[in-house]
Image 1: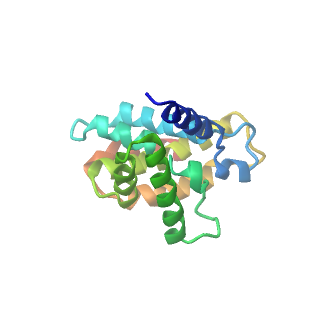
Image 2 (image 1 turned 90 degrees about the horizontal axis):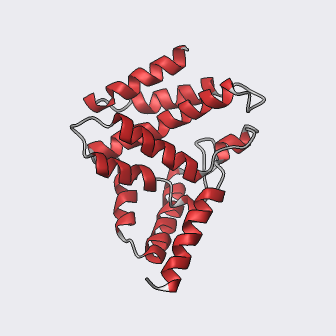
Length: 183
Protein backbone atom coordinates (compact mmCIF):
# COMPACT_ATOMS: atom_id res chain seq x y z
CA UNK A 1 0.00 0.00 0.00
CA UNK A 2 1.35 3.40 -0.92
CA UNK A 3 2.23 5.90 1.83
CA UNK A 4 -0.07 8.57 0.37
CA UNK A 5 -3.09 6.27 0.58
CA UNK A 6 -2.20 5.25 4.13
CA UNK A 7 -1.96 8.91 5.14
CA UNK A 8 -5.32 9.63 3.48
CA UNK A 9 -6.98 6.76 5.39
CA UNK A 10 -5.51 7.97 8.68
CA UNK A 11 -6.65 11.52 7.91
CA UNK A 12 -10.20 10.53 6.92
CA UNK A 13 -10.72 8.39 10.00
CA UNK A 14 -9.27 11.05 12.27
CA UNK A 15 -11.44 13.77 10.77
CA UNK A 16 -14.57 11.65 11.26
CA UNK A 17 -13.62 11.13 14.91
CA UNK A 18 -12.96 14.85 15.42
CA UNK A 19 -16.09 16.15 13.62
CA UNK A 20 -18.64 16.78 16.35
CA UNK A 21 -22.26 16.75 15.21
CA UNK A 22 -23.52 20.31 14.89
CA UNK A 23 -27.08 19.62 16.07
CA UNK A 24 -25.79 18.60 19.47
CA UNK A 25 -23.29 21.45 19.66
CA UNK A 26 -26.05 24.00 18.93
CA UNK A 27 -28.04 22.55 21.83
CA UNK A 28 -25.04 22.74 24.16
CA UNK A 29 -24.75 19.00 24.73
CA UNK A 30 -21.89 18.09 27.02
CA UNK A 31 -19.38 15.93 25.11
CA UNK A 32 -21.46 15.53 21.91
CA UNK A 33 -20.96 12.56 19.64
CA UNK A 34 -18.73 12.71 16.57
CA UNK A 35 -19.70 11.73 13.04
CA UNK A 36 -17.70 8.52 13.53
CA UNK A 37 -19.70 7.64 16.64
CA UNK A 38 -22.95 8.40 14.84
CA UNK A 39 -22.05 6.26 11.82
CA UNK A 40 -21.06 3.40 14.12
CA UNK A 41 -24.36 3.69 15.97
CA UNK A 42 -26.35 3.66 12.70
CA UNK A 43 -24.33 0.62 11.60
CA UNK A 44 -25.14 -1.17 14.87
CA UNK A 45 -28.84 -0.40 14.37
CA UNK A 46 -28.57 -1.80 10.83
CA UNK A 47 -26.88 -4.94 12.06
CA UNK A 48 -29.46 -5.41 14.82
CA UNK A 49 -32.61 -4.46 12.93
CA UNK A 50 -32.15 -5.21 9.22
CA UNK A 51 -34.86 -7.66 8.16
CA UNK A 52 -33.92 -10.75 6.16
CA UNK A 53 -35.55 -9.21 3.09
CA UNK A 54 -32.73 -6.64 2.90
CA UNK A 55 -29.06 -7.09 2.05
CA UNK A 56 -27.56 -6.57 5.52
CA UNK A 57 -24.01 -6.12 4.22
CA UNK A 58 -25.18 -3.36 1.92
CA UNK A 59 -27.09 -1.73 4.79
CA UNK A 60 -23.85 -1.74 6.79
CA UNK A 61 -21.93 -0.15 3.90
CA UNK A 62 -24.53 2.62 3.64
CA UNK A 63 -24.60 3.16 7.40
CA UNK A 64 -20.83 3.39 7.74
CA UNK A 65 -20.44 5.79 4.82
CA UNK A 66 -23.60 7.91 4.86
CA UNK A 67 -21.95 10.95 6.50
CA UNK A 68 -18.39 10.61 5.14
CA UNK A 69 -18.84 13.61 2.83
CA UNK A 70 -19.16 15.82 5.92
CA UNK A 71 -15.41 15.55 6.40
CA UNK A 72 -15.18 18.19 3.67
CA UNK A 73 -18.67 19.68 3.46
CA UNK A 74 -19.31 20.15 7.16
CA UNK A 75 -22.31 18.95 9.15
CA UNK A 76 -25.54 20.80 8.44
CA UNK A 77 -28.82 20.50 10.32
CA UNK A 78 -32.32 20.98 8.90
CA UNK A 79 -32.51 24.44 10.50
CA UNK A 80 -29.27 25.72 8.94
CA UNK A 81 -29.62 28.47 6.40
CA UNK A 82 -28.63 26.36 3.40
CA UNK A 83 -30.78 24.99 0.61
CA UNK A 84 -31.08 21.25 0.09
CA UNK A 85 -29.51 21.71 -3.33
CA UNK A 86 -26.51 23.57 -1.92
CA UNK A 87 -26.08 21.01 0.87
CA UNK A 88 -26.16 18.21 -1.69
CA UNK A 89 -23.66 20.04 -3.94
CA UNK A 90 -21.20 20.56 -1.09
CA UNK A 91 -21.54 16.98 0.09
CA UNK A 92 -21.21 15.62 -3.44
CA UNK A 93 -17.98 17.57 -3.91
CA UNK A 94 -16.79 16.28 -0.54
CA UNK A 95 -17.51 12.64 -1.30
CA UNK A 96 -15.87 12.92 -4.73
CA UNK A 97 -12.72 14.34 -3.14
CA UNK A 98 -12.69 11.66 -0.45
CA UNK A 99 -13.40 8.84 -2.93
CA UNK A 100 -10.41 9.96 -4.95
CA UNK A 101 -8.16 10.24 -1.89
CA UNK A 102 -9.18 6.79 -0.62
CA UNK A 103 -9.21 5.26 -4.09
CA UNK A 104 -12.74 4.01 -3.45
CA UNK A 105 -14.91 5.46 -6.20
CA UNK A 106 -17.84 3.30 -5.04
CA UNK A 107 -18.23 5.82 -2.19
CA UNK A 108 -19.81 8.15 -4.75
CA UNK A 109 -22.39 5.53 -5.73
CA UNK A 110 -23.17 4.80 -2.07
CA UNK A 111 -23.60 8.53 -1.42
CA UNK A 112 -25.95 8.96 -4.38
CA UNK A 113 -27.97 5.88 -3.44
CA UNK A 114 -28.36 7.01 0.16
CA UNK A 115 -29.31 10.56 -0.76
CA UNK A 116 -31.85 9.44 -3.37
CA UNK A 117 -33.14 6.60 -1.19
CA UNK A 118 -33.44 4.68 -4.44
CA UNK A 119 -33.24 1.22 -2.87
CA UNK A 120 -35.01 -0.42 0.06
CA UNK A 121 -31.65 -0.60 1.83
CA UNK A 122 -31.05 3.13 1.41
CA UNK A 123 -34.54 3.99 2.68
CA UNK A 124 -34.05 1.67 5.63
CA UNK A 125 -30.67 3.18 6.57
CA UNK A 126 -32.05 6.71 6.09
CA UNK A 127 -34.70 5.88 8.70
CA UNK A 128 -32.05 4.39 10.99
CA UNK A 129 -30.12 7.66 10.66
CA UNK A 130 -33.18 9.52 11.96
CA UNK A 131 -33.86 6.87 14.60
CA UNK A 132 -30.31 7.18 15.90
CA UNK A 133 -30.92 10.88 16.55
CA UNK A 134 -33.86 9.93 18.78
CA UNK A 135 -31.88 7.22 20.56
CA UNK A 136 -29.06 9.70 21.16
CA UNK A 137 -31.40 12.50 22.27
CA UNK A 138 -33.04 10.10 24.72
CA UNK A 139 -29.61 9.10 26.05
CA UNK A 140 -28.56 12.73 26.44
CA UNK A 141 -31.84 13.62 28.19
CA UNK A 142 -31.65 10.65 30.56
CA UNK A 143 -28.05 11.48 31.45
CA UNK A 144 -28.54 15.25 31.82
CA UNK A 145 -26.10 16.12 29.04
CA UNK A 146 -28.02 19.17 27.79
CA UNK A 147 -29.57 22.22 29.46
CA UNK A 148 -32.81 21.49 27.57
CA UNK A 149 -34.90 18.44 26.77
CA UNK A 150 -33.89 17.20 23.32
CA UNK A 151 -36.20 14.28 22.71
CA UNK A 152 -39.39 16.19 21.79
CA UNK A 153 -37.72 18.20 19.02
CA UNK A 154 -35.69 15.34 17.55
CA UNK A 155 -38.52 12.87 17.96
CA UNK A 156 -40.99 15.03 16.04
CA UNK A 157 -38.57 15.58 13.15
CA UNK A 158 -37.60 11.91 12.93
CA UNK A 159 -41.22 10.81 13.16
CA UNK A 160 -42.12 12.97 10.14
CA UNK A 161 -39.18 11.56 8.14
CA UNK A 162 -39.75 7.94 9.07
CA UNK A 163 -43.52 7.83 8.67
CA UNK A 164 -43.22 9.43 5.23
CA UNK A 165 -41.64 6.17 4.02
CA UNK A 166 -44.15 3.36 3.91
CA UNK A 167 -42.78 -0.15 3.61
CA UNK A 168 -42.79 -3.30 5.68
CA UNK A 169 -39.06 -3.13 6.44
CA UNK A 170 -39.70 -0.20 8.76
CA UNK A 171 -42.06 -1.89 11.21
CA UNK A 172 -39.39 -2.40 13.91
CA UNK A 173 -38.07 1.14 13.45
CA UNK A 174 -41.58 2.54 13.90
CA UNK A 175 -42.07 0.37 16.99
CA UNK A 176 -38.83 1.68 18.56
CA UNK A 177 -39.75 5.24 17.61
CA UNK A 178 -43.16 4.89 19.26
CA UNK A 179 -41.64 3.33 22.38
CA UNK A 180 -39.08 6.11 22.86
CA UNK A 181 -41.60 8.88 22.14
CA UNK A 182 -44.06 7.49 24.68
CA UNK A 183 -41.51 6.66 27.35
